[in-house]
Length: 373
Image 1: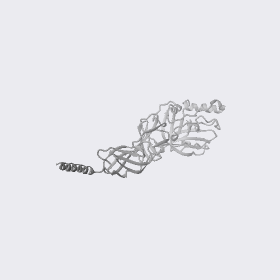
Image 2: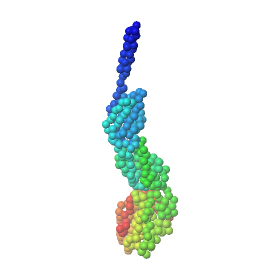
Image 3: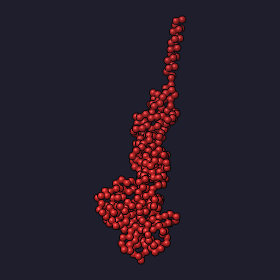
Image 4: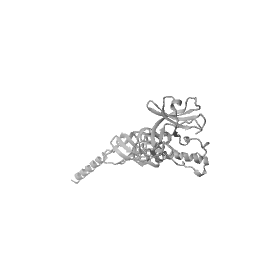
């Protein structure tokens, strides 16, 4: 009987050992492809393969030795969020006791915007941003001005062209992001968003209120001027402050930038008018005689800015062509001579009424026939 029991016990032990030996091994995970070979922080990277999810076992993933958050997981797919501060390296996936890897994924640097040109704009204007690692797809790049999303027209790795939105502050701070990565901003990288309408009683008041205007260095040492140039400066200030009503033509592509408005102490002749000092401060002539000097296509908007030599007259005229207004310089060198156009005509983009004076924004600098101004 003892022999029988011994045989039974040995049979049971042998059966247990056989069951243990027959426990199937864990499947080996394998990465066979990745969705892209170049990624950026915040990007989603998808791994394809087999056995990428094992029941009852946790999964960890690393890109370039940094932990990557798992967005979704199945037996054949594994989606990872590319972490911050990551560098080019391999992809390692641990599933329980099993490990698989992909030899390398290239990681490009963080996106950066370095400059905006121009640094001022009206809502709806286009601005060119320059930087690095901005990508090629407008759908992966997000840009804000004071937290207001902007419309991205085009993007290349080192440039992005955007449309200035409405609803920002006057000094709007740029911020940006690629994919779902970290948001970046630089407090001193701002765009001056110019109000469409500024209430001002003089040109000077308008320019002081316009955030696209920069008066840095615009006031020179008055006491160091010669008496003649003090007189020139005094008259200029009368134009600016509205004591003498005048017209100013300013190129919109320099945003009314008035650095150096008062820095003309070397003016060759204090008797000249002051249009050049402000890119076109003009007084309306009292005797334009348009019927005598000008073809009929000119309007009655005629402004004289030089009358310094006998029989020499230089005028700024505004004319209308196909419903669009243009401004150009003209010159007349003798009473019996017809008027000659001087330089290209400029399209008038906007008009600003400043008390009794007017600012016209034009699409390029005026060309003046008298003097090297």
